[in-house]
Image 1 (cartoon, rainbow, N blue to C red):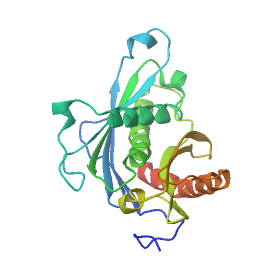
Image 2 (image 1 turned 90 degrees about the horizontal axis):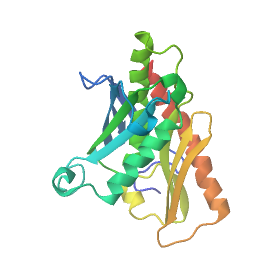
Image 3 (image 1 turned 45 degrees about the horizontal axis):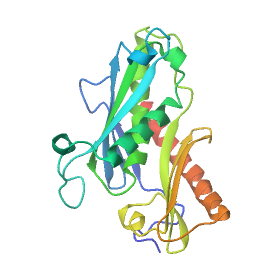
Length: 236
């Protein structure tokens, strides 16, 4: 029995509320169980210097956690500087979202995705990617409605989910009690068509076999159906 009471292959309840930030070109509040992340997309008619005059667009991301997103208060990173964990996560979000974008069709402009964790209960990077895609899609829809781009640069859905081995059992979508005790922990980033973008897996006091890795990937692909359905409902 999981601490959450869910089935081994059961994802947490997902809700995505859009239009939560007035000034952003795209925004949503994604809730995956008790993990809540605010995602915004900001459009700029410029690109980083290394892309100037290439005709290619760019998608980048920043990530942060509010001081009381966790059980005890964290000090703000604005005061102490970004941690290595934060830098690693925001790079993951950025390259994951870029994998679902035709940067030629986007044109020479940048969309920045900001992911701010309001409440953390495991899987914050995965929720950020899933919600970040929705915010990005909403911003792109505005560009298309305004006639600034002629074809949709969003080539596929992008979403992410955690899987792991807890008490010897492969689980889908770990919450914090499961994640903190899991012998194997993994994050899976996939497209809506099931293509892999990135897999992060590590043993935490236990090793895993190739068969077990396959079982976790199967669970991740199963969870993608629910994530994509939630994304489609949000942007409909």
